[in-house]
Image (cartoon, rainbow, N blue to C red; front, side):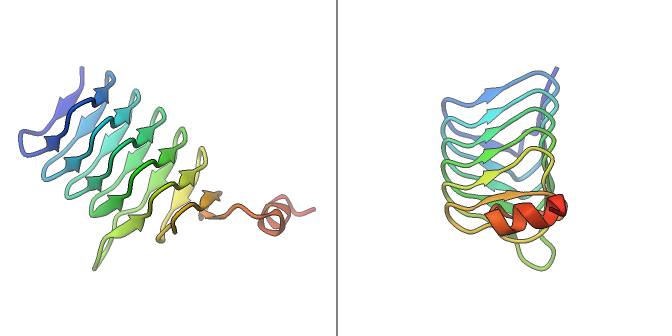
Amino acid sequence: MSFVSKQAKIKKGAIICPFVTITSNCTIGVNFQANIYSYVAHDCIIGDNVTFAPAVKCNGNVIIGNNVYIGTGAIIHQGRTKPLIIEDNSIIAAGAVVNKNVKTGQTVFGNPAIELTKENFKKRLKL
């Protein structure tokens, strides 16, 4: 069973799988897909055509743009004094821990999440 707060606003075409939690004051765009065990905390704004793979944790005060994919087990940290923003057409890799804004079209990975470039990938692998 999933839980969706009465204060959440969800537009048409959303797919909410079992064991998903969507808390208060969330606004969710068209064609949102929340896979099993995903979580959307308070005061999040999620754009159109966003996919959460299984077990994504989106903590409070986060803005996610349109056409964003967030991989399995990724954690989006809570925005503090202002929202944490993931811009349009971005990809968050599985297991990534996002603690700062993600720019349009970026792919980020790791803990903490950094942009996926050849150099960053080599650094993380220590090659």
